Amino acid sequence: MTSDEIKDLILEIIEDIDDEADFASLDADQPLRDQLDLDSMDFLDIVMELRKRHKLQIPEEDYPQLASLNSCATYLEPLLKDA
Amino acid sequence: MPVSFSQLDNSYDVVVIGSGLGGLTTANRLAYCGHKVLILEHHHRLGGLSTWFKRRGHIFDISLHGFPYGMVKTCKKYWNKEIMQSIVQLPHIVFDNPQFSLRTTFDKIDFTKLLKTHFRISGEVIDKFFATVAKMNFYDDQTMTTRELFERFFPGRSDVHRLLMEPITYANGSTLDDPAITYGIVFSNFMNKGVFTFEGGTDKLIGMMTDELEKNGVTICARAKVDKVITEQGRVRGVSVHGKTITAKAVVSNSGITNTIQNLTDRDLYSDEFYEKAEKIRVNTSSCQVYLGIRQGEKIDDVGDLLFTSKSPEFDSEELLDMKTKSKTFSIYYPKTRPGSDQYTVVASMNSRYDDWAHLDEETYQMEKQSLIARSITDLEKYLPGVSTKIDWSEAATPRTFNSYTLHTRGTSFGTKFEGLDISRSISKEVAGLFHVGSVGIIMSGWLGAINYGVIVANDVDVFLKS
Image 1: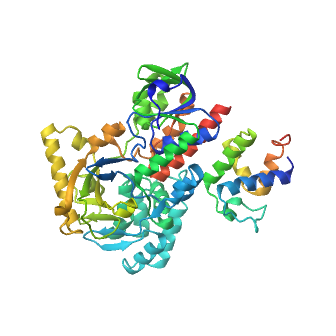
Image 2 (image 1 turned 60 degrees about the vertical axis):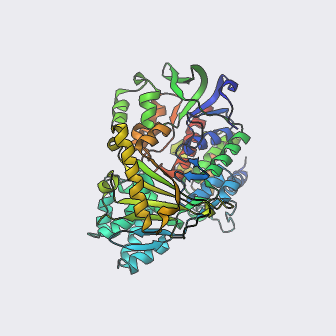
Image 3 (image 1 turned 180 degrees about the vertical axis):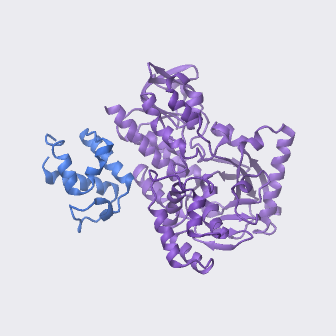
């Protein structure tokens, strides 16, 4: 997966969590949490969904790496390079 | 429909012991993740304390009133849209005690207004208080108690303390001496938008959840009391139930955490350090309830959905637990609870100590139950004059009743105090493949807490099964 495909994947998962999420003014460098009103349960959903779809095991200490859209892409790119 | 015991397979990926909202949710999430899941429930009915019973045409709900708005998002994500769409607000919350009488929607906007106009607290203090509780997380410092939190913002104002604490005590059994973070998290959840309930009743909710579980391939078996979790070299191998062994890679106990450690598993599975900590877990208090059915064809006025009433001069956690407490909540279930029905029921709830009730001889026990019913009806007359002539069914539940239906240690109706959370979270580090979900730590309690905790535990189990 390319960096852009990973970002699309994350947005797709977030849309499943909240179909009213507004991505129009999303800043890829800023925390998703504040911009999209995501809580810790939503982040857990993202982690579970990545495991379900791509068999990715993300250790709890790495959760902060999923803070913004860009940091997600940076963190996940090597893990999903063959996906 | 749940399957009969003889139809069960010999092996599953996961066995969930118990079918409270936490157990049901863990099962549903694990099925969603692709695992073969079996739920074993000792009672004939699913739901744990999210339950109901029928008497002479009445349906009595045990814990339907009420939960925070967060249930909307939680039910949509972890159950389905139909369940989410049945969640409705309980708009009229009433307080009546010697210090104040008022009606509120129990949300931040209305509470801010009340604190300003009724209690004469400055806007600045109110905003700071709300900002402080909203920021609280379970991993924050636990040394500050709720009493200290209240004294910091509203020193000497026992009336304000009562307004803020009384509903939360009924919601989760916590007291002024529990960690302030447990208060802050639960209170903020309610203050988001108020108090909500499930339209159609507990029976409809559990029915819809059962349908969803079966759609997702979960096998459900009721009247199946697990005797023991079976282990081999410190790892889970399955469960023993009705003399049969069912193997599983993981077992999730939705039995109480103390039951899980003391009754379902052997002592030698645990390290001394863990077991000593587990022995120190304080289970929360239990409850008494009085169920009153209004005769078919009779009506009662709309006097509010949830009434926090007391004749005690001030809020006092000990007074609330007394066998003859002057404090109780009335949940009034109007026909709107189950649209299409014309039934009215009232459930009075009190917090109680197991020890006060456990050792009474049968005659005294029955007498105390009757006097509990009589006191409840007398108190209800204040809000619904003449109601005593309209009641055609009355019945009481005590900590003994809660113990007998849930099997919970000392009949706890609110799980454990804060320390139970750590033990529940870390049991899988002691016994590979053994997990716990259920009301622990005050915050993982109530309908919303139980469901969300179910999701958290399902994630742990999924990680374990896929590693």
